[in-house]
Every structure is written in C-alpha cells, then in structure tokens.
Length: 491
Image 1 (cartoon, one colour):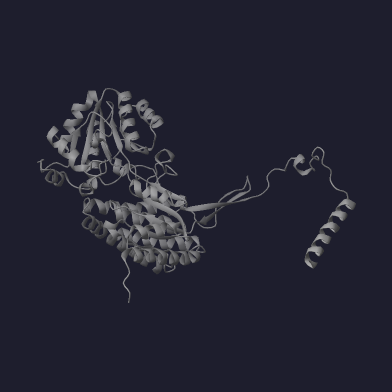
Image 2: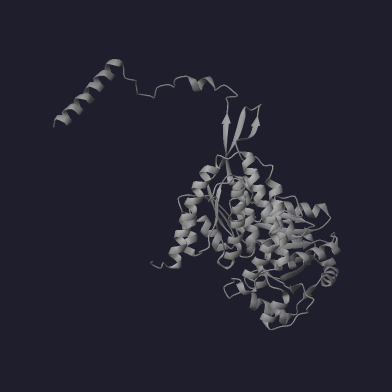
C-alpha cells in the first residue's frame, strides 16, 4: 500500500469529514426541536462530567495553563453555554407576530468549519459543537497542531453522546491529521457553509479569505482602568486573580493596569498582597527580550507559563509566592514590547492622573493591538463608567469584574461563549459573543398588511417618441421572423 505524505493525508481527511458531516446534516436538518435539545443536553452533560480529565489532558499536551482552571473553563463551556441556549428555538417557526402577520422560521447553515486555538482547546471545542448542533448544523473541528489529541478526545466524546441520544452518525468530527493544506481544504470545501475561527491573527485572516461567511475573532490587548472611585481591595484581588487564571491564556485577560494616580500606590500595595511581583528594570528588560521576537511576534514557548518558569527562562529570579509579574511601563507601541498582548503571567502598569488621561492611555493600548475586543473598568463613579462605555472602540466593557471570566459571560450577563467577536473595527463581522443565534439563518413568511399604492397597479406612460405596435404590425413582425427561420433551415 502506497504511503502518502502527511499533507495529502490531511487534505483527504478534511474532504472525507466534510462530506460525512454534510450527509449527516441533511438528516439532522429535519430533526424536531425535542430531538435537537435531547442530543445537545446529552453532549453538554458528558462534556461537563469529563471537564477535569479533559482539562488536565489539554494542559499536559500543550504545556499551557493550569489544569484546575482548564477544568473550570470546560465546565463553563459545557454547562453554562448549554444553559444559555437550551431554551432558544432553532426548529421551525421561532417567532410569530400576529399584528404584523409575520412568521420567522429557523434554517440551518449546513457544515461549520471550526478552527480552535491551543490556548483554550477543549473548552472551545465544547462551545462550538454545542452551538453548531443546536442550530442543526454539522461540524468539523480543525484543532491547533499542538492540541490535537485533547480536541479529538473532546469531539469524539460528544459525538458518541450525540449518536446515543439520537443524532445521525457523522455529524461531529475533529481532524487528527492537521496541516496547513488540510485546514485550507476544510475551509474552502464546497460543503463548508460557514467558518468559525478562534485564534491568532493569521488564522483569522485565513478564515476571512475563503469567500465564505466567517466569524473570525482575533487577539485582544485589554487594558484595565482603576479609577479613584474604585473598591481597591476588590480591584486588586480581581486583577491579580484574573491575570493568574490559567496563566493568562484567555484573550480577554487584562494586559495592563492603568491606575488613577491618587490611588496607584495603595493599589500597588494591595496587589502585592495578592501575589503580584513588581519587577525591577533588569527583570522588566529580561521579560521584553524573552516574551517577544524582534518582529513583535510572541515567543510561543512563554505562553501560559507561571512567573517562576518565565523567570527561569529569562535567567532572573522572582519570589516563589509570585502569581503574576507586573512591569512598570511609560509608553505604548512598537518601542515597548510589553505594551502588546501577553498570553502569559506578565502585566503592564501605567499611572495616569484622572480618568480622562486614563481614558487616553487605554485608547492607545486598544488601537495598538486590541481594537473592538474588550476593556475592564473598576469604578463606582457612574460618570466615569458611562464615559468609558460610550467612547471606547470595544464591544465588551466589564465593570468591577474579572476580565477572564467577565468577558466570556461567567461573571456577567453577556452571552456565554469562548469566541468573542471584535466587530468591524477589529476585522470581524460582529462584536457579539458568538453563540447559536449566529449559526442559523431566518426565513420570513410575510402576509400583506397594507395595500399597494394605486399608481403601482396602473400602466405606466409610454416613453417619448415610442409607440406600442398595433396588432397588424405585430403580425408582420412575427411573419418576418418565421420566414427568416425557415430560410436559414433550408440553407
């Protein structure tokens, strides 16, 4: 038997999985709401019960984050996501307005191509499988190469539960032979109806370049402004806890504190008590050189690591009690690498006098690398809160909450999701937290509710200089055409 190169095997696997998902989806599209909900509930339940095992598997395979925190993310992506969508109608008539005589009918998209990141692999698979199947779609997951095994295990676990609950075989797939060529085949395949991409900038750009509907969500560079009106004890606890959570691999994690100057010293003291180690200039410079390559790209080896691991890699020492490292910064942009998104336990620190100056600094960060994504705010002054809400070019403004858990919808009332849109200004089609509503279309059955204008029913006036031919003229024209046809056929 001939041996095929990995890229060819990956391409063939993508084709086979998409075709199988398409055939199964054609059956699933005829499912009742009761059948859909029974299958999704079974998948959510089995994923929730495997949260700890899959979280540990993800951490071991990728080398990123904290297993206990990945368990929490898995529980969120199964239980909380399902709770948020279980009552959403996705079959048949989903809304009816008797007054307007308008019916709205749900219609599935088809096959979803789901690209998932290495930072949140199993939780993202759970999330995307649930919202896709709930909308009566099939799904093929393309995992990051460094997270293949945990993603395949998650998808297969949910697929088995789905079939046992009544779904057709082949509805849910996850590629195990991953290559750039195979992923491109998945995205461009004629049976792929919509792309759901979560990950870095290159992945999102690839998703948007296929000529298909695509929900692409990229990086965030999330500032957290702490106002003089804030509850400082709570702010310190939440900021340190959020940045330390799963070693900072969620894209909505705080990337720099912007502290109002009158409270900066007190906030620093409180954060130190929570486990924040403020680096000296030598340690800060070591982090600059370690975390980023000369072109600004993040050093993947530093992603999702503890302060102690980072310090060892950089050749410096930090306390064993340090949960995060905080670097004092004075500027934002290419000349300051640590003002970029840092998917690890390093946090920037700026001090500004007054919320207006704080606002400007936050805008700098957002424009440098997080347009459309998120901002966190600790304040009790409603004037300040609303100013940030109205003026910032982001679509999630978390108030007095943790960035990691607030933006995804665990500690706030935004829609629970592991895929956070950054809107048009961030290069995405929506600023929403992506959920089931984005994965089905709506047909509208509309009865006449008002008569058309009479002018629309009357014959129009003849154009100037043009007259309609009478019956005799029409007859002559017809005879001439017939004669031409007969002549050409005889010739």
